[in-house]
Length: 236
Image 1 (tube, rainbow, N blue to C red):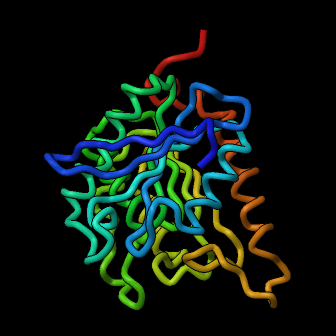
Image 2 (image 1 turned 30 degrees about the vertical axis):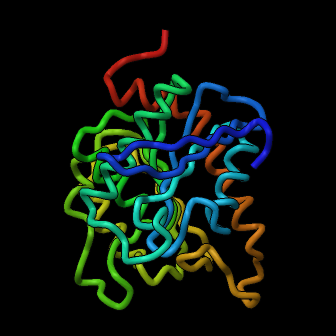
C-alpha cells in the first residue's frame, strides 16, 4: 500500500472488515469506484490489483474491500443479503470519507452481481462497472441470474470474455433485450472468466487489460452526459 492510500476498518452490522482507498493517478479526482471481489478472491488478489491499476491510471479512484467471509480468512461466501450489506457499509464509509461527486459501484463476478442487485433495488449510485458478470453457474446455462437486470436504472459498463464459462454471449445478449438502462456490453475476444487469453488467440493478457482501460476511459468521459440523460436532464 502506497503512502497516499488510506485503509479503513468498516463496521458491518456489528462485525468489521477492511477497506482501502487508492486515489486516481490523475484526472477525475471526484469520481470513485467501489469494487467488490469475486467468490474465490479477496480485495488484493491479482485480478483486483490489475483492475485497480488500470482504472487509477485512467483517472478514477478505487475503493477495495473484503467481504466478511473473506476477512475471516476461510469458509464459503456469505449469503447475498449479507454480501449486499457489506457493500452498502463500504459505500457509506466511502461517501463520508471522500464525498465523491460521482460514485460508481461494481466488481468482479459475484461482487459485481451483488452491486447490480443493489442498484436494481434502488440503492443510490451513479453507475455500475461490472467485470466478468456471472450470468449463470458454469455448465448450467439454464440457471440464469438475470431477473433483476431490467430494474437497473443507472448507466452500466460490463466486461465479459467470449470464453467465459459463466456467461454465454448469446444468453447475455438475450437478457439485455429487456434492460432499458444505458448498458454498454464489451466482449473481450478470447478471454475467459479471469480475462486470460490463450496464446493461440494472438492476444496477451496485458492487451486485454489495455482494452479494458481504453474502453473504461471512453465510457467515463461520456458518463456525465449519460447520467444526466438517464435522469431526463441536460448539462448546463
